[in-house]
Length: 160
Length: 91
Image (cartoon, rainbow over all chains, first blue to last red; front, side):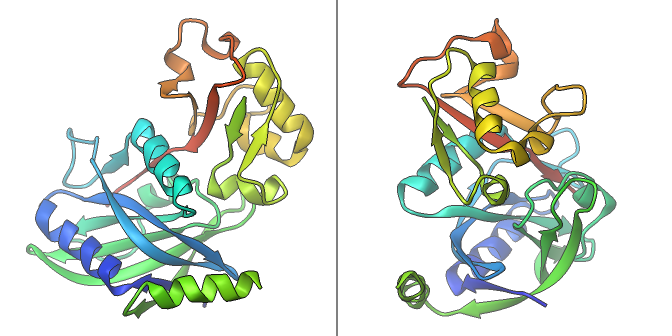
């Protein structure tokens, strides 16, 4: 099982976001750096849920907002390594809809169950495979780290 | 112009996150991109050669699908083209 490393500030921010938007789904992007086969996530960026017609059980990030998020990440030397959303009163497991709509191969999809307004379990799933036809979700372990600095130092040392 | 390659497609573009091209239109730019990195073609286009439904292409801040000339829109050296697969889901 691969390990998704995440700063504690990110972990807490995405869970708090899900509580704030309850009973609607929250969503956002996860910025970080690629590690061997996974990601170190340093920052979460909140995004608007454009599915206002069915926000309790659907989410969508406007492509224009994604372009902006990606541009700002790149300017700071980061990449979009994944996305997060919440499942209000539903398990922290990917759904058929999540899978059908997942197109970011090699990226992590993080889901937090929000039970009656309180953040419960948070799970991460790496979208693996090399095409739309053979893609699949593989559960990742989430490693919460205290500070971003060690991640930066680690990335620098890997560059050599 | 500069084409920005999103995280999931970099594995099929030699690990690169940008490519400079010299095409005159959006479709010309995408053709140049897939000539340099042929493995990208199946990720961007259907078998019929149309952009896949979940692939969004933005010329600067505009969705190419909503430009009057769409992929035939002229581009200049200072323009940027962002390829952004869609993000959606839910319970």
